[in-house]
Amino acid sequence: MTGDNALRDFLTSRRAAIDPWQAGLPQPGNSVRRVPGLRREEVAALAGVSVAYYVKLEQGRIGIVSEEVLSAVENALRLDDLERLHLRSLVKQSGNHRTRDVRPAAVKARPALIAMIDALDPIPAMIHGPRLEVLGSNRTARLLIDDFDAMPVKERNLARWMFFNPRAKIVFPNWRAMAPQTAAALRNLTVDRLADPLMEQLVGEICVASPEFARYWADYQLYEHAYGTKKLFNETVGELTLHYESLALPRDDGQTVVVYTADRGSPSEEKLRLLSSWNAPAHVPARQPDAGRRPAWASGSTARGSHWRSPKGPRLKIPVQ
Image (cartoon, rainbow, N blue to C red):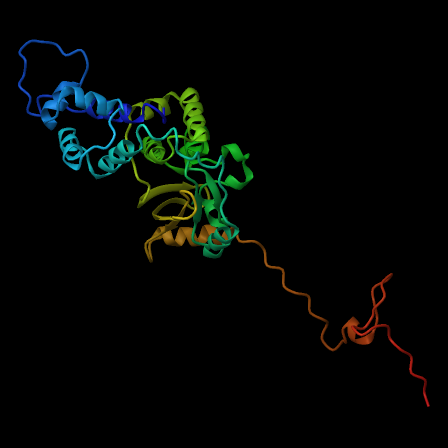
């Protein structure tokens, strides 16, 4: 699903999505096509390469591919910018991913990153891992979306949560749009983790347990979770419209910090403020000595069973002259 056949699966999915007649190919009269989309030989003709060469490319048996050939194939398949980046990464890694260093089995957010998102509170912020793991979230994010910290480690994953946790359909009223977007975002992340057994396991388990995810995964759509707007619902304050920004951490193995904000002066900003303030931890003021009364430490009195000593040692009795 994410390994040896990634390049083939991607190119096959893009061929199937193109109407041959809209691509400018002549209509063959009354002949019936057994599969939708373009055939390999048709893509080869549109790209100006031999059929044998294109077949090898689709099978990942081509070494270095020239810029001219890549551009021709991209144009023939009508790829957008994200799809072109995805194809180039797959071509670059094809035939070589078996020898790449396998990534660490699991990743963790640095303590400084956790402290940073906590400092952003009451602005909701989360840390995502390279497999859509939730590696950390601050207090308001937990109130707004879900308390991932309280879940078993295996369940702290946005893809699992979106398709398995009933709360996802509450938090995202437009779940039908968000679910395929989540699958597409995970699909886009696989290009950098073709030799990752945990990614393979994650995708396989969700495909088996969720027919909806399996259908979205087979479509091979791509989505980059970079920035945008989301509608969320919270039981305490109702519906909110929030902007999100994903900030990549280049030295943290695919981790990103995602921050949610509302327009200044908007109802969503007020709701976010209310959500945070209503659930703020109680502040316990420091105890002050009673007015007009010397504190215990000043008089030398102590609690029962305790013994007070000065910083320099035991108290000394000075005889009266």
